[in-house]
Image (cartoon, rainbow, N blue to C red; front, side):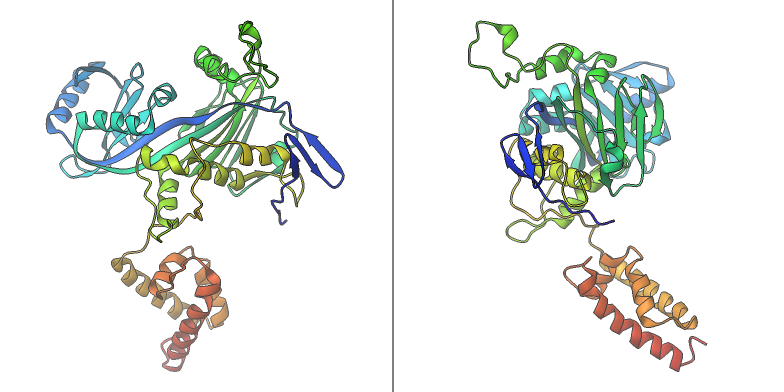
Length: 428
C-alpha cells in the first residue's frame, strides 16, 4: 500500500481537511532536547592508565582514581565492545575503554564517552564538547572524533495515543515492540534494555540504527528516581492561559503533579549520523561534518523531522495524523535546521573497493551467462544487491544510488559482457 504525507490545513492548534476538524489545543510540549550523547574516539590508550586499570581489575577494586576523579569500575562483557566501563554519574559521565577488537598499542576506536541528560542541560554545546574532550584526554592521547550517537526527545502533556497506533504507524523498520501494562521487563533489544510504565510503550527499529520510541516518561522517571528533576524541567513551561500574574505560583506552570507526560524519542546510532555526513552536501557542495556534539547541533531539527517521516503516523493513506504534523512543524531543537537536502549514504567506496567490485561483477555476470538469464534480469538483480553505490562509483556515476541513472549504463555493460561470454564459449 502506498502512503502519502499530505498535511492538513491549519489555524493555530486546529487542523482541518474536507470533512474533519481536529483540535489539539490540549497538546502541550513541556520539553524538547538532547537526552543522551555517546561520543566515540579513535585514539591511543595511555599505557599507565591501562596498566593501572588492569591491576585494579585483577585486585577486585571497585574504584579507580584518575585526574582527581573517582570512577566506579563496573562489570563489562564483550557485548559492550569494551573491556572497561567506568562511571561517575555524579559528574554525569560513563567511560567505555579499550576495544575488544583492536590491540591496545595501536590507534583504534578504544574510547566512548556517554553523557547524562542532567549534564547536557548544564552546558552549552561548545562547553560540553570541551568537557567531553577533557574527560577523554584523561584516558587517551591522539584523540580524533570518530562519530556521535544521540537521543533526541520531546515530552508531551495531553497526548492520547489511538488504540490502533502501531497499525497506523508506517515504519520502514521491521522490528516493532509493544508492551501493555508492564511495570518491569528486561528485554534483549541491544542497548534498549528496559521498557517502563503502566501505560503503553512502543519501540520501533533497531538500537544499532535508528530507533523510535513512545513511552510514559512520568512512570519511567518515578522508577528511575528522576521525577524531581523532570518535574523541575516541565514546571518551567507556563500555562497556555497564563496572564503574567506571578502572585499565585501554583497557577503558573502548565505541568501539575500527577499529570501524565509522554516522551517521543528518536535514537540515532553513530553509523546513521555518519551516513548523513556522507550523503548531505552544504551550499558549496561539500559533505557536512558531524563528528561531535558541536557539529551536531545545527542538524538536530532536521534529524528529528527525518525520524518522524521514517516512522510516520498516518491518519489515512493520504494524510499524516495531525499529531505528527504538529510534532514536525512545532518542535525545534536549539535552532531551525539549515536548508539542506538531508540524505543518508554509505561510506564512499575506495579505489581498493573498485577492484573488488570489478572481480565481483565479472564473476556474477559469468555465472548468469551460464544460466542463460536475460541481460535485463541480470541488471535488475545487480541493482538489488545493495551495492548500487559501489556500482555507481565503479561506472563513475556521480549520483550514486539513483537507479534510473545507473540502470542504462549497467545494462549496456551487462549486455556486452554476456554476449562476449556466450560467443567465446566461456559460459558453456
